[in-house]
Picture: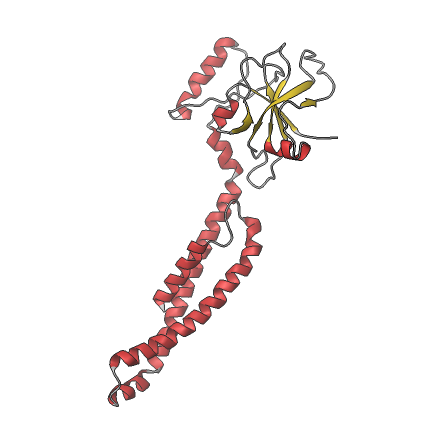
Length: 263
């Protein structure tokens, strides 16, 4: 049996969350109780259950009537297709979803989403007062910015990103220190040779170019091995990343430039 998330929402839901309706239309005020059932599906549902077809106008049956609200439609005509939204966090794969008008399928405990141009926290008391002006006995959960929910969902990914960045900077510092130490030792160990060459009449620029050339050759070989290792390790690290490429050419080029400059 086909399965999908069933989400009764109000008019303006997609605009408030900035979810693009890519085909058809969003839910409207005319989609009310007594009117034919209307629904917006997400891209995942359209691609899974209507592959290669136009889902607009197709009808979806949602099972038996509700005991507490038998007037709710059991058949919904698809009027629009919206972009996918993650329901279980940033790592969850897009799930099929069916959005229906809350006027046609009321919820006992709906969540109200309001958009504002000021600090959302400053409107908490006003929101409570507006709700209690309708029903003073209505229990109202905490009023909080939607950003808090988003922060909670991405907290793990954000921690991993910060931790990875710290380790990357430490690794770069250690690598730069190692390159500097090796090159300093190589130059110091050849001071005698350079002195002899200069005493025999070799041009200082030629001696310097010879030393730098050998040093850069060694550094280039090491960087080649390091880049190859980074590319191989990227496959392992890709499972810990979200919407970030494991191989970023700009980052790799920056690391190579820093280490070559140190060398």
